[in-house]
Length: 99
Image (tube, rainbow, N blue to C red; front, side, top):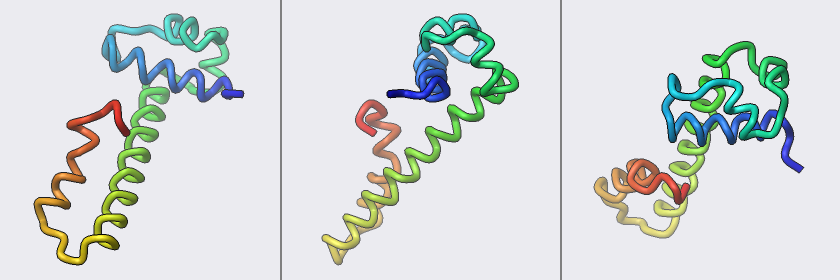
C-alpha cells in the first residue's frame, strides 16, 4: 500500500510536470493524491518544501540510474570510451519515461 506521503509526491511530480509549479495548487494535488489538503500540510510545510522533496527524489533516481549503468558498463566493457559515459549521463534526460 502506498503511503499518503508517497501518493502526494507522485501526484505533485505528475502535476508539476504537466502544469508547472505555478499552474497547480495544493487542492489539486490533494485531489489527485486522494488525500485531504491538510494531509499535505502535515507532511510538507509549504508548496516550496513539496517541490524540494520532488526534486530530491528525481535527483536521487537519476543518480542511482547513473551509478548502476556506469558500474555495469565498466564491469562488462574494459575499454569504455568517454562518449559511452556521456551517453549514460544524459540518457535519463533524453528518455525520461524509462528511468
